[in-house]
Image 1 (cartoon, one colour):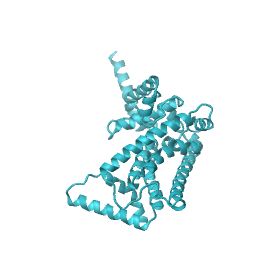
Image 2 (cartoon, one colour):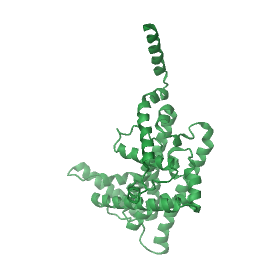
Image 3 (cartoon, helix red, strand yellow):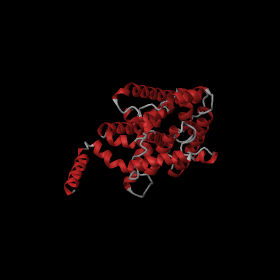
Image 4 (cartoon, helix red, strand yellow):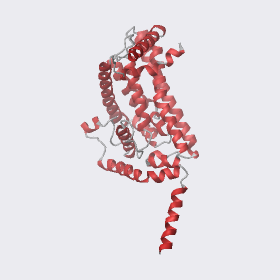
Length: 337
């Protein structure tokens, strides 16, 4: 039972495989089909959906966060040069209590979101005797159908995120506005964990609901839902890392990662006056895109970060070489004079 459930995070990658006329590909497809069918027959839809969501989120959010923690411990000078001013909080041990608070509330919010998801499924299936909100079927979704569903779900997330973020979480004088600003906009330390740090109701409305409701409304296949959950979790980990100066150009879709990080940091730098959507499409359409000043500010930080990257590596790796070379050059100039 446990081994079958633990194989869930690997199954979504089947949607990215284009079937070819080869024996190995056919065997892989057959293996995944048998594994998925075994899960359907041996576990309830609620167990598959909830455990699959937890495992996918753990893999695609926690692993990048742990990688960032390792980088900050191993190369503190480099990481400090990558980060924007608001994301540098909590780099020393004096803020460990605040970092622990951020991590604890982030975990609480994730648990609340999981309970809300389980409650909706229980209401639909057990109380109302309806079909589950997320489609649990033996058949695997086709690549074209899955891609179309992913596009529609992400479009729905962009629209809902913008509407809730602008008209609820940033509505002047509102209760949620005060709570959201005192939590998420307090510039807490904690790196990517800030993505899930907010007043619980504000988190459920502003982050979880836009991610879950489009999938439930369209009743997408569970594997498609897992792929989208993995995508959102990875984007959350990247966009809240604060690495506005990191050289992401060599990464696959590195420009997208850089765009997300700069949008997130720009939103908080501007005190939440613009940049309410995920990708900026709704901001562009409704006139709340990132202000030119903020864009220039962040772009300038990125360019300066690239120039200082070599010095940052020197600091992070023990960096006395650069200083030694500077002294040697100075002595040579004095001798020549």
